[in-house]
Each structure stands twice: as structure tokens, then as C-alpha cells.
Image (cartoon, one colour):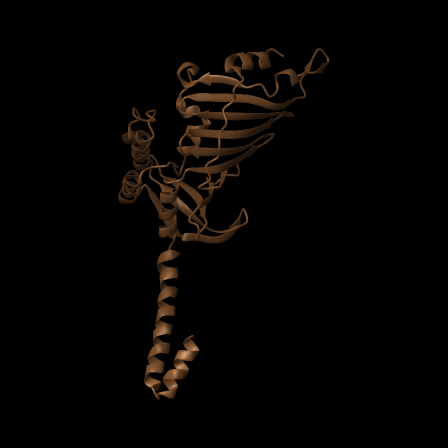
Length: 300
């Protein structure tokens, strides 16, 4: 189309117009290049776009891998933040020859747990313990009767992490983002930017510094939006003199989705995927009390 236009202009002897058209296209292309490099791919913009996306998602998947000596943990968590707020997780724990695989569904008021597999070197009466009769049986407890703080639940540990997740209204999200920016809760170190490939994605990996006092205040407001008041009695001023926390954060610069958080050690790597997918959580119909299930496991 462009070549045809230029030929018509040439036939009319309008060479100056041709130069203007060519110059216009070159200026446009240069402008787009400047915008991509200085604005769209700016590390700060990538980080804050990702932060905002985290606060407006109906669901996501998190995978945590920890390894220390003879102990290891691998946990896969699918989180629903739509009509029902639940975390559905599969956790594999290995320590000194014993492996325990559990499945867990918990949210604001309910907690369901079952053991999928237990293998151990322990002997009972000269033979391996037989856990099969208790495998795949759901144990249940409510938040009101468990006696455990909500902060210990996988659901809350997943959404209230280094970078929080939620499904806020536009106004609520704007309030949280503006507070975090204004108070410099997170500071991106642009000199640390690396282009890498993680989990099959091209990512920008950057060091981010977190001010703990501002982080606590931000999380208290976010907790109110989510009806979670476990942080209401925490005094942010206690963290004013604490040194800031530095983590490595990897983000897909195109989708603006968080890909990985690394706290700087081999035991603190968390990967993220499946943003915008709301997993359907089916709550177990048949179950016994979780306390009863745990007592039966311990009695073997």
C-alpha cells in the first residue's frame, strides 16, 4: 500500500511529498522504538504493572520448592479468588527417608486435609507401618474450632506474601498501589536487571528492596479489604529501624505476570503461573474430624 502511494506521488512529480511521507514513517518507527525501550520495557513500569495485576486476579498457581540437607518440600497451590476463596494444595515433604504427601483445601472458614501417601523407614513390631487404611480419608476442621491462627493457613500464606494477591475493586487496587508507590514500599534496582529464561518464559529479573514498616501498613489495609484482621494488632513502627529486605523478582515483560520470587537462598524459590484461571474447588462431602484423623495416624 505504501509503495503504491509513493508511485502515485512520483507520477505527479511530488518528490517533496514522498520525502515527507518517508520521513514521517521513520519518525513514527523511531518514536515507537523509544516508547518500547524507555516506557513499556522500563523495569519500574514492568514491576508496578505486575504488582497491580496481582491485585486483580481471580486465581493463580504457586509452586514452592525448599531443600535443606536431607529435608525437602515441594508444594503446588491453586488459589481461587472469585466467588469462593480457597487454596487447593498438594505438598510433598521428605525427611530422613520418610515421605509424606498431603492434599489440602482451606479458605476463610474451612480446612480439609487428607494423606495421599506415607512411606517411612520406621518399623513397628519388626514390619513397616501400614498407613493404607487411613490414606485418602478427609479430615475436616472449621476456623472457629481449630484454635489455630488464620495466618497459618495455606490460603492466607499464599495471598499475603512478599508480593500480595487479591481480587480487589478498581478503587481498592488503586489505593494499595498508590500507597506502595508514594511510600516507596518497593524499590526496583534498575542496575540489577537481567534478561533470563525461566519456566520457558523470557523474563526480566530484578532486585527489589522492601521497606518493612511501609509493607506492614500496606498489608494491614489489604487485609481489611479481604476481611482478614490478624494483622490489626501489629505495630508497624516496630519495624521502622529494621533493615530492608532484598529479593529477586522475575516478571514476564509482555504479559506483566509474576514468574518467580527468590529470597536469595536455595531454599526460597517460589514460582507463579496460571493467572486469571479460577480453579473449580469441590469440597469433600465425606470426612471425619481432622483431630481424629491425626490421632489415628500418630497411633500407628
